[in-house]
Image (tube, rainbow, N blue to C red; front, side, top):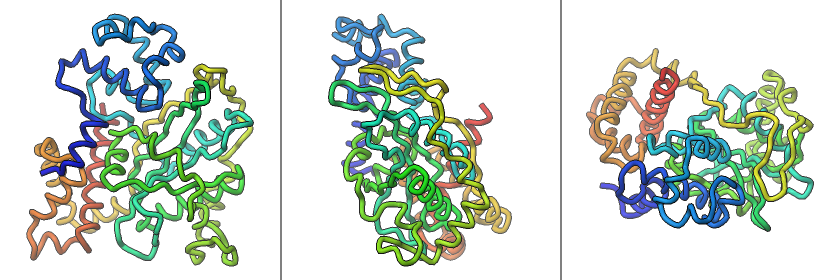
Amino acid sequence: MPSAYIKKLLLNFIGESKSNSVNIVAQRFIKVFKDHGVNPAQIPRLMPEIKLNDLQTEASLLAVLTPEILNNTSKFFGISLKWLEGASDQIYENLACYQRLEIFFELFSAIQAGKNDDEMGIPFRILTVSKKLDGSSNKYQPLIPVLVERIAQLGDESIYRYYIFNDGFDWWHAPARIQLKAMARIVFTHASTVSPLLVVKPEELELILEGKMIPRKFLHSGLVSNPSLEDFAMPAGSPIAREVDEFPEVLKYIEFNQLENLISVTNPYSVLSDNAIVNTQVDLQPIIVTVTNNASKAAKARHAQKNSIKDRFILFYQAESAKFSTMKAAAENFFDSLDEKTEKLQFDSKDAAVRTLLDALRDFRKSENLSK
């Protein structure tokens, strides 16, 4: 059964009070502003179509919430319109950059070019469960790259939009690790900005990875972290360098993929307007892509039994997902049910099994979204 802590997280960040689906629209409209640091009374400053009188009750708010207002709110915060309308429990659409770095750097460059001179230029931040990353360990070490864009200013308070890359990066996976190091090095050397590692609890990270939590409270403190991600992409001799043996591989990756040609900090995007919404010249909404993990794909071809286990887990999750607070909890329960002498032997460890099952489920869900 889910722990009390998980239940509280789900209540705070996913669920609404019991009501009909129409009332959920009003509740989620208020919630998305609150979760981005906007007091309900401040909403008219960002959405002039909404008046203070409209915010007195759910009924009065519902009376003025048009499809256009909901669509504009979705675009403003970069969230799913389906979630806002109560038709989905996933706040963020799937956004991926594994082996598709042009997506990451297009967004990064636009954010850098659109910031004010007085703005702290740290748009690239990484959520992790521990700063003690170890590429030589086969332990599950999940990370979530996030781009942070300031989109409005309310007095002294900045309001941000978040681009969450939910590829399922794992520091243990060498290709993903080298890519993350290359991303941090390019950001550091060409934009003079660090990439802090920000620690969250495993349960919270899983919810963010699934697109079910707005990560504001985790992303705006401790920005001078020790280490930062770029420390893992420094040459030997630097006093802050980590995992220096892989530095040549990072440089090769940068050169082979021509990453230096992907970043630009002079793109002609408009700057932040006063106390209002950013008027960008391009659509910076999350780009929905499906990225296939090549290593996982090859493993499926080599291991028929493991492939069968993955397929069974997908069917299991579709049938039993309501019983679990997170996908990870479902994967752990499914692994525990496997045969000790045959099926569990297909995996190096329980952590490795859970990681593999979650990758398979996310690939399936992304392919399903793409086909709709």
